[in-house]
Image (cartoon, rainbow, N blue to C red; front, top):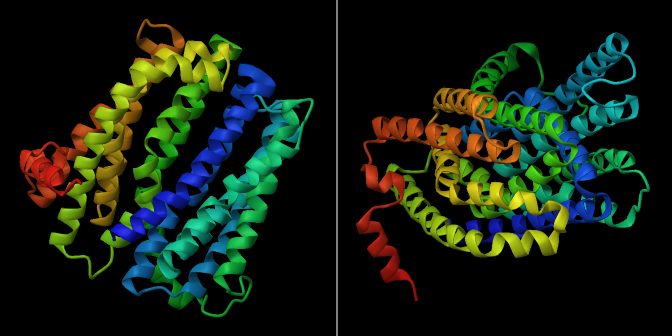
Length: 425
């Protein structure tokens, strides 16, 4: 488990660093306005993908691990589902432009077409990635995961577009190539109808969509909240969305260890052979690691936020310093919320995550639209408070389901702290 986590973190770090470099390149070339537009575009793509996925990646992993689904069935189902999703998204945007005219949700026709194609490629990549997680070695899964980021950094580095609106095509190309490479690695004929009989597949589909629906809501709401936040900030100032995206980027980078390891944790904890003792031990270790990361991150952001943002992104992004500090000072709740949601999903409790996501969304929107703060600071406070309330709810649910000690669940157990201190060199 430790070796797999180490390999995962090392390779997934490459992907996150690549995406971070993409944001740096965009910020330096096109400033806050370009950064804000492309962040809004990417959030819209990911929001569409989350709606389309309906939590199916988690359902596929869960069923593949339980032995009720084969790799060939999963790949073929994913392919045909991806084609259906593409047709639906094309229809939605076509009707939208017929009604709204040349501009829809702030995007022209070219950008809308790019959203459709990028979303289709991203959805197929996510489904194939889930199949590789449950059926291929960890190294293969990690390589499949970082394909889009590696391709994006190469394309952004090579393409010196004079108009940042043209860069919407980068995600289209990156996700299309990534999904094709993932399919080649899985080694399954994606268009064969073998094993897809309606009678045999009915039970699989029923469980997949039920489990998947409740697994999908948290991710879908997250991307919806991102879209609404960027829209709120763009209405305030064209620069504000780009500046806040830097704060979210730095938060994502700080959460790298857990965010990249979460799929592997879900895969391991959801397997039949994963015992209660092993699950509890690995969860407690990661919870206390998160507490340590929070302490280090809080100390670092107070001293390094201003020079790092000014040096890496430029002086135009210095207004992002305070929102960054608010989010990183709240890293404890973001980390533990993500860890708890992974545990709950592996325990077969996606409904609890759905309720937590709803609570988070209500709190964020409430603070965002009713708190009388500067727009960028308001967004950061809203996200931090919303995550804290959701985390408290999940802690209560985990305690009821497992009976684990509260201090252990929160990552502040003196016993575990002493154990980890004794194990350190």
